[in-house]
Every structure is written in structure tokens, then in C-alpha cells.
Amino acid sequence: MDARFNLFDNELATRFAKRFANAGTVIHQSPLPTSTQELVSLRASQINGCGWCIDMHTKEATAAGETSVRLNLVAAWRESTVFTEAEQAALALAEEGTRLADAHQGVSDETWAQVRKHYDDDQIAALVALVALINAANRLAVIVHQRGGSYQPGMFAAAFG
Image 1 (cartoon, rainbow, N blue to C red):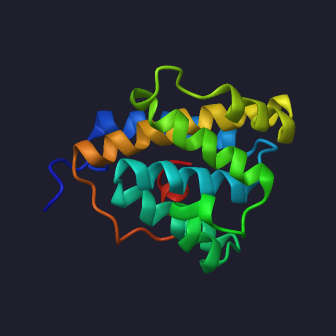
Image 2: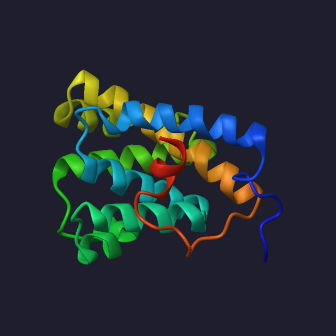
Image 3: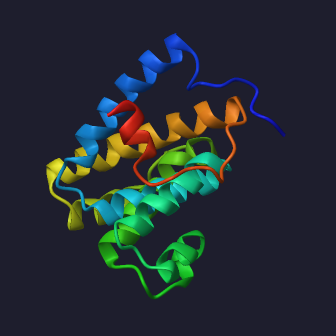
């Protein structure tokens, strides 16, 4: 399957991508740990079936020092021993915030309490914004069939940063 539309070759899409990247920069520069940011982005992208974003966040996480064991177990984080309680709370928020239509309440009170237990207000703001932003990125890429496999670490930042 080829991409339906190249978002990187269109002037309007490129202008949008620069602003989108700026929003990502705010999150990236937040006190939310980079490893948590990449794990959350990877998990939401797995749920949404976004090959482009899975490729990007796997490679960015690896470049930042994340281990292959942890990356390989993100999809089964509940059945794994390699994630901290804080990371588990963030992954639960990512899942519930991505699967809004699956539950009438969206993010459960139990998950929210775990997030509050492990993160301060700035980290929570970054985490909530990240879940929203990665879901938007997934939708952009999936709609146009932007395929994974060609991403190189730092590519997005270099193009739009």
C-alpha cells in the first residue's frame, strides 16, 4: 500500500506540521521523562495501528537509550516486570485516553489516581497533552497511509524543529 498523500510535500501540510512539531517541543522540554514520553507514544501508536509512529517512537526511544526488552514489552506492559509503577500509570492513561469510545467514562478514576500519585502538575499537563498529540499524529498518518520503516532518529525534529 502506497501513501495516499505526501504530507511532507504539501505547503499547507508542512506549515501545519511545523506548528504541530512546536506543540511536541513543549512536551519534549517538559519535566515528563523522555522514556515515559516515548513509551506512551509507542503504546498509543500500537493501539491505533500507526506504522509510521511506531517506527518513529521505537527508533527515537532506542536512540535515547531505551532497551529492546522494554520496547518489545510495551504492548504487554501489564504482563511485564520491566516498567515502574509511574510508567504503568502513564501507559494506562495512554490506553484509556486513546480508547475513549470503549468506556463511557474515558479515563478511569483509578488510573487518574495512579497518575496523580506518580506525577506532579507539570508532568500531568505534559502527559495529557502528549496523549492528545500522539493520537492526532496517528490519525494524520493512518488517514494518508504514511507507512513505517523509513524513519531515522531525529528526522522529524530536523525537518520541522
